[in-house]
Length: 119
Length: 107
Image 1 (cartoon, helix red, strand yellow):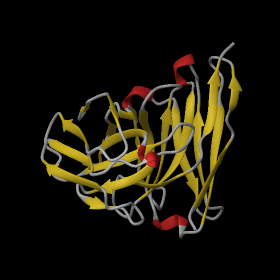
Image 2 (cartoon, rainbow over the protein chains, first blue to last red):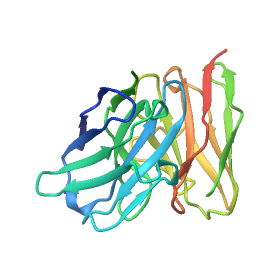
Image 3 (cartoon, rainbow over the protein chains, first blue to last red):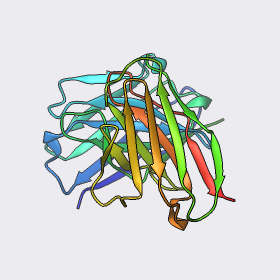
Image 4 (cartoon, each protein chain N blue to C red):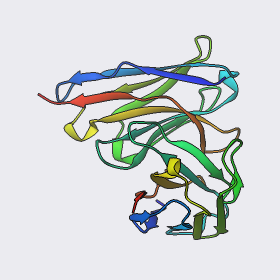
């Protein structure tokens, strides 16, 4: 059974940083692209970033202006999102998602980790 | 960027009703359209991919159609467990974009 378990969320002050992690199991992690999608409270879904299975290619939402960096460690079956210069409008539940093979759709999602940016 | 719109933004329906949700892309995306269902406090769940292909385990009362810029999600006979918010997503090109969602609630 595919499982994705996010961690690393919490309360952070504006301008601060957090590293989110997503531990994957139940599939050959390095064979699949992975992504982060976020959802602000009471709002819709927003794609954040994706990374290829080998970690070579990354894609990011332009709105992030380089503040977030996606990475992965295939030896640890773990996906990461480094978030810097956090702002109040980054407050959201951050979901880790597994991409379907060779596509940009998400066939499995974690339960999410809440990031709250507030002073 | 490809903008996605959905209509209606919300719909009130009864068990057994047929519900149709539409999704429109600002430019052609062939059949690279995905539908998700999200219940309160839960992660989204993949329902339909490639515009009309049903994800494994999803009930057959869900169906999708369309190509190019106009797509529909149909629930043929609404069940109690179908009350949720539905999102479309274009998987054609980066940046990936979602529609704003359609909330289906109880009439």
